[in-house]
Image 1 (cartoon, rainbow, N blue to C red):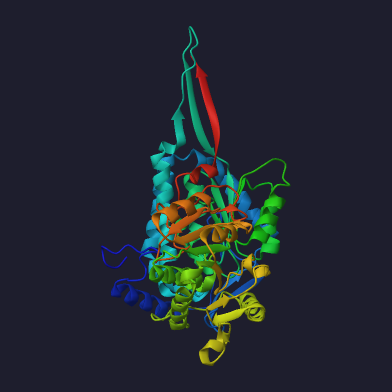
Image 2 (image 1 turned 60 degrees about the horizontal axis):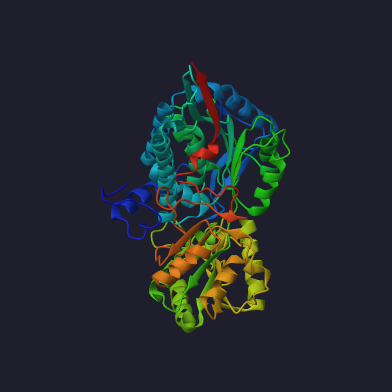
Length: 525
């Protein structure tokens, strides 16, 4: 992307080359001139329309009709699953090297369309331009990493020991084989990376896929499906359906045709899918990523400039709508006042506005429901404690057509307040003074979630924190993001406890095996 030496990730996005901005702005202008088109579902290599439609409107400006999408039904769910089932045998028998090559070709198509992706993500999700482009770049890198891991493990075919049988030769192989048909249910906040990543893992391992995106973000996921189609995947191997979770989504989850599920979203929805899927005839794999209540701990020995930058970026990037967002800040008493002052200065300087504009850091929240939650939560927190910064929705001028909320820091909220443990998924973080690091760790671990965590302190404090924190991803002394910014091949992403179901992280060395089951082949000669 742009300059040859610049590699876009969530850690590097704060100082991009200028031509990146030029390309992005050109793509935004091009898209805005052609908004409102109708998009079909993609089933068995064909465009499929439904009788009912739904509108995809921008949270940036709800007057902007981005596109018209299909309100798929249970019948469409069955059609997509049958197509995936019909294609499953041939795809599983395709040499794993050929599958890896096609997954890489899909990644190349995302690269080629990255500014289109960035513009769509900014308009559809409300991501600022760097967050938007990084989401697309991560999608491509997740695909490449999946192909790399398939190759590094030689297709997961392992020669085992030979039985010591007199007069015979024994040949034993452990082979990991695909399950069959895999359902991917992707979220609104990372509709490129968290659609493409699970799809790539399922496909490279030989499963066929049905993907159902969040109803807030069908356009980005449609672009992902198109990239797989353009890469040359056979008909029926990749299927894309759109519609409500309570009807289309539930029909997919309930179907005996589904051999495995990857879901990213809220704890409540994830646990319902987990229980519903368990009602089948026999156990089937399910990979859940269900959010977080992520702490950042600041030691009295911390570099406070690094800490303030990292907390600010992780608390308010993508308007706090990341399952990895910093929502709790635990600060040792001697540095509390100075850190709070630094956070206040940074937060007050953040530019709120149209996320397609270069200067904007904070765009709108995703939808009316999140907007209403913000108003309720900030009112509750203002009564329970003190709002250091923020607490208001923006309605003046152009803000009135979108869902704009001020980044908010809450102080002095009693520890027994439910919002200390509830995931808000909004630009709100809560700061607590603690007497020592042991108290911080106790508070950090007392929630049901265990996704990400961060610390700022000495090498010894970091080693202690990593040993005892209950989280799948832990960062130390990171100004690029206290609890956010994982990247495939660098920081595999996944959670413990109520944040995840498998204990293995996406974009890491143990992820592909979750899409495979072992068969041992023994031949006696």
